[in-house]
Amino acid sequence: MKSFSLFALVIVALGFVVPTLATYSLTDNIVGSGFYSAFEWEAIADPTNGRVNYVDQPTSQSQNLTFASSNTFVLRTDSRSVLNPSGPGRNSVRIHTKKTYTTHVAVFDVRHMPQGCGTWPAIWETKESNWPAGGEVDIVEGVNDQEPNASTLHTTAGCSMPADKSETGVAGQLDCDTSVNGNTGCGVQFPTSNSYGPAFNSAGGGWYAMERSSTYIKVWFWSRNDGSVPSEVRNGASQVNPNNWGTPTAFFPDTSCNFPDHFQEHNIIINLTLCGDWAGSVFNQDGCPGSCVDFVNNNPSAFENAFFDFAAVRVYQ
Ligand SMILES: *[C@@H]1O[C@H](CO)[C@@H](O)[C@H](O)[C@H]1NC(C)=O
Ligand SMILES: *[C@@H]1O[C@H](CO)[C@@H](O)[C@H](O)[C@H]1NC(C)=O
Ligand SMILES: CC(=O)N[C@H]1CO[C@H](CO)[C@@H](O)[C@@H]1O
Image 1 (cartoon, helix red, strand yellow):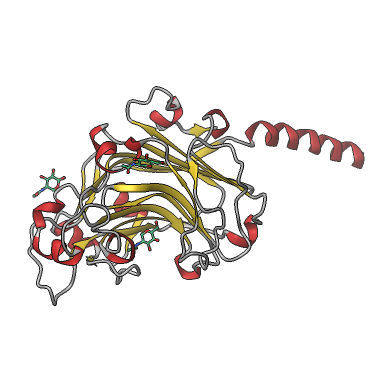
Image 2: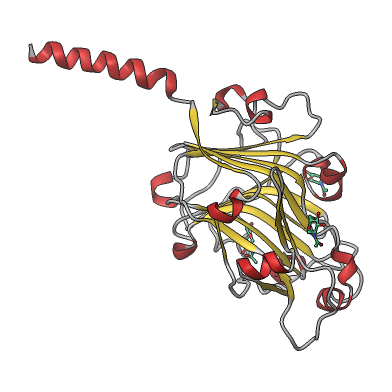
């Protein structure tokens, strides 16, 4: 009797587990004003030394730095004020999800991303209270409208990527350790120029998706008119199966990286800084004029296109 019920249990468990392994169900469908309840505003000093002043939620709403309609959430930096050089930086917004996630799929349906000299936008995940021990996954990040438009992992020592992996992007440094090469991380550049900045925007944006399983992280990008976008991604289906999404743009397997040692529960973070440690340091190299800080202080209208427009952020678990 006992062995029979154990046998039955195993059969039932297999029946449930095997077909659902790669299927994730929608747990957070964040659209329009839903961003105000799903995310917390981080009115903090920019840890990357940008020329920004991160404002709280009421301020972002009263200054229209965030704006929600039934199907839109806009997040931007101020494009009206000339700044006092000795005062705070340009008002901007940084938000993170109230919830944290381990194994999950996140789909970002983005119509427009911040563009312009000095901009450094990012969509990423980390555990802010335990960085870098909890790991960091950058889904999309770039500066000054230039490459690298890349997905990157940042970890403590002892996590690296194999040279040969199945992805459509171009791998850079393989060691994910933040202490190597000034926190370059192990990154993969997107192979298409419409994955970032002005080219992304003129194509109407697109979708970034990230799958974090217990043994790998994968990132995909599809431009708005890319025929290969899976219909479940395009339509915001209630279930998704990334096994059917084709070769990822970036693939980060656990071959030489023990995931439980390097990745803890993460918030999703969306931030828009200006200048700072990265965008500021390559400002002229990227073809932008003069000093980044002076440019930000004196040219509010240069930031009119420095905004994200999200159709949705969807999380599946
Ligand atoms: C606020 O921003 C939205 C989105 O960009 C825009 O449509 C709207 O006109 C702005 N409202 C004001 C009062 O500027
Ligand atoms: C994105 O990176 C690729 C290299 O992988 C490069 O060819 C492309 O120009 C970059 N896009 C932008 C907007 O810089
Ligand atoms: C200012 C700020 O918060 N910058 C962060 C934005 O996102 C990147 C990740 O891609 C972080 O490294 C920065 O610290």
